[in-house]
Length: 465
Ligand SMILES: C[S@@+](CC[C@H](N)C(=O)[O-])C[C@H]1O[C@@H](n2cnc3c(N)ncnc32)[C@H](O)[C@@H]1O
Image (cartoon, rainbow, N blue to C red; front, side, top):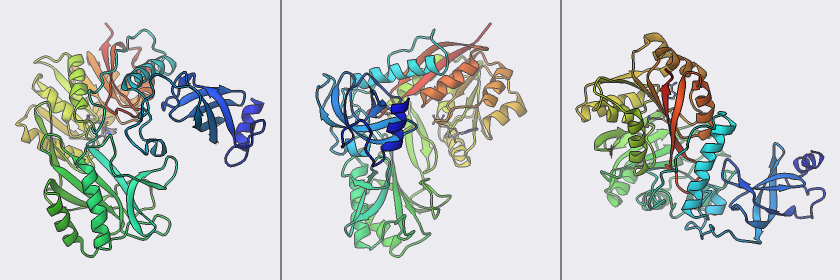
């Protein structure tokens, strides 16, 4: 403990007492952290190391300390795991977005299954449930259909890329290996046109400039592309000519939106939006149904895996013709609309108004009439209406659901609950709250985010008799 305190007090620029002058220490990776970093245990305490694989030994440079834990990077690898591969991406270490670019995909999938099992045990105190092998991708690259990129300036030139881990310094990119290949050439031309039209990127220290971020959404099915220019001002000189030139260079762009964000914040999108070109949304398809997606709507980012994810959820739900389904945390009603053809009625409840409007239009677009789409907090809705439902399908954000929502579900007693989660730790916390009323029958992780440490999970719960 004493030594750990020294590590805590003395890192951040200073040298560690007991370590050599350069904060270098040797160690062997014994496990992986919840963010996929290699764990080494030293006399100074635990150190989490980027890109270090289990079993590997290395000289580590400790770069900072937080809450008594050291964080470091590999200075020199002393032994190599047979799972180590060369990363496709040249900036994978500096960017930090892809934890597993240097490991085999099988290693990554094993880690993800282990992470779900461990969180269920450690956080949810659930150790009697079988976690299935993770459903992975055949080609775990170029999948993301949404990318948000900051723009800046370096030595007089416009740059764009990803923030270096834990900083606001932009590392320029040409191609991100997990994003749709359609995005890279559009970003390159936006940067060129910004130089030509003298449109300055936003400078967050001086609060000057115009373009803060560019968000691109792509559709795998229709090949439509949405470009959102997130700007610090409501209008800028040359805007129309800029858009005309951009859409001529890229006829695949079907809509351009300007989003205004004047706030000093890390939140990318502001409130105000103006459609500058096209209809303001793109159409995508999942399992034969068409969905409109606008700039702010939640839509799963991996178009190939999303079909496997939703098929898993619907198989778990074992729907039948007389069932009523509550689709909670519905987004643009993807799951609700997919479930609708197998049941009597679906009630989709979603808080975000623009997603509800998309959902209503999506129902019309697919000629589906046995769905009721409600703009409300899903807990409030259940407590007010006490709907009689057979199945609840819930897909909350990363922070998980709430005790209040889970208590409301227990009140209406559906025979099945299907919980879709993108964060195993909050899933485990919430499943523990369900345990007194529901049996947890099966848990299926699906890899929606290959090469990163994130994993999606579907859990199937059945009401106890
Ligand atoms: C992970 S997304 C799931 C969306 C959808 N099920 C899908 O697969 O595309 C979570 C959604 O829950 C919504 N949400 C968050 N809190 C909510 C609440 N208290 N009540 C209803 N919806 C909520 C968010 O706006 C978001 O659309």
